[in-house]
Amino acid sequence: MSNGASGMWYYEYLDQIVNLELKNKPAQQGGTQLRYRTAREQQGGQPLCGQIAQALLPRLPDSTVILVTGTGNPEWLPHGETDGPSGVAVLARCLGALGVRTCILSEARFLPGVQASVQAAGVPLLQESAWCNRNNAALCLEFPTGVNAAMPFVDELMKRLPKVSAAFFIEKPGPGREGRFHNSSGKPKDSDCACEHGLLDATELDFLFPASVSNWGGYAIAAALALASGRFLLLPRWEEVANSISAPIAFGAFDGYSGLAVPTVDGTSSEANRAVYGLIGEVLRLAHEASNSSHL
Image 1 (cartoon, helix red, strand yellow):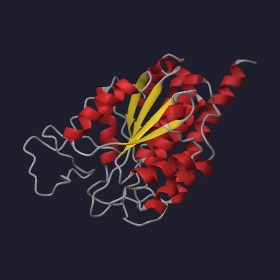
Image 2: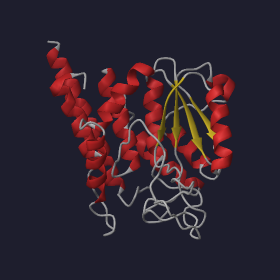
Image 3: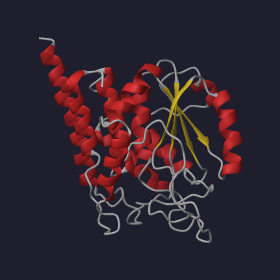
């Protein structure tokens, strides 16, 4: 970490805040910390959101960042869930404030809710011709379903978008080694398939950042970018974040944990989400205070 031992602790705080476990299903309890510890050990041992922010920041000027979200199944979550879109929306808002374009991808059945979330967070959505000439807006595109359709789309998109510096997948599973997709419980989305080579996502990544709730992981990366850039007031107000959580519900999204059409996320209440976001803001306040003190 390049900002010294003291600065490292602020990234540590962010990592720990968003890996606070609040699970109410016995089969999932204990998994949050296990996933986080394993991921951190395998990635050098330093706070993960800080590693991501410091690797990304030099690549950002005049670039495009791809943000991908949207998950569900045709039976229980036909139009997606409240986890994922808000994390993308807040990250897009903060990247825009840093002068970075974002391209947001999601399947057709999830895209209306994702777009509503992004707009609720204050991010301007533009058509591609205008978006290319503005460095703080978002372009939302439909991502095709199925591995066979996805790869040609990605190849064409990478040629088309200006200076892609990074891609983030927030609450967006990739396929396993056999090309099959699984939910967060490890169950195949196609219930007739048997997976002989395991259930794990086989996507190769530069960084893996587990979080108790995917939205929280997006907020932590945005906050880590604020720390790394010295832009301590970068994050949007809670009211805008709350709107970005609830906006997809009008387009058929549910809480993926409870299955209810209410503005909770993975079974965590609105109050809990506000408290986590408030703690993230407190980390930035403390860092800002320390920075001002060091310049006296």
